[in-house]
Image (tube, rainbow, N blue to C red):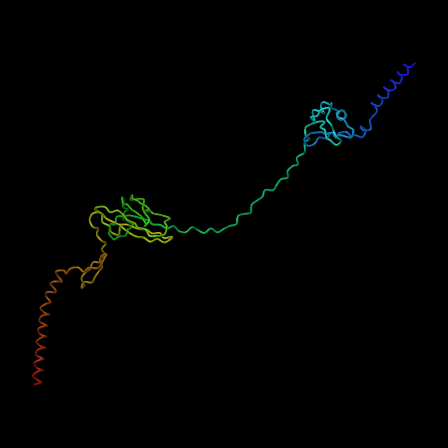
Length: 289
């Protein structure tokens, strides 16, 4: 009879414990289900509630206790506090819709402001030419040819500016974009060559000056100067006009004969005039006495 009473009490105790274990606990009813929405990194958290345990959080999240511990790097003896966040799942991060970029109007630059660019100043130039001066006047005529193998040297007080040897077809040779100042120009002279103008010249250049220098010469016999004859009346001796001055021609034989024929008449007239003057003087002297 005693054994039967103990057995009954034991059965009632086991039934009570089983019912208590199966009855929903007030704490579990107070807990909220973990959000299934992952954060920006794809992690789902569970918030620890008061009187919560690791196995209860794992069961509520649908994972095993081992998975919960691995996800959070914990052990079964780890202490958790209400409000802690435990990782219960890691999923791919949610895709966020990328807003379409509205077309951006391209910035346009304002048109450039027109500016007045002054024209460049004129160049400062020396041009050189050597020619055969066929008429010897020191100036190049259009028909007078260029001269080859003439060496020019252009220099200033600071040094040589240029050296040039003519070829007889590419001249004049010009030095452009020179700086203002004094320039000396010399040319070579051959053994049988005679210059018709100076072969050594000094030029003073201002900004924008453009100078052409011609160097004339001839080789061999002296060239004949250009001669111009003027018409004269028959009674006047003819003269020849040259480059330098007019020179009267020498007397012709006819003019010499005319001069010799007129001389006796002039001598006789002079004697007669002298005799008359003497007679007059004698007559006046006698009358006074």
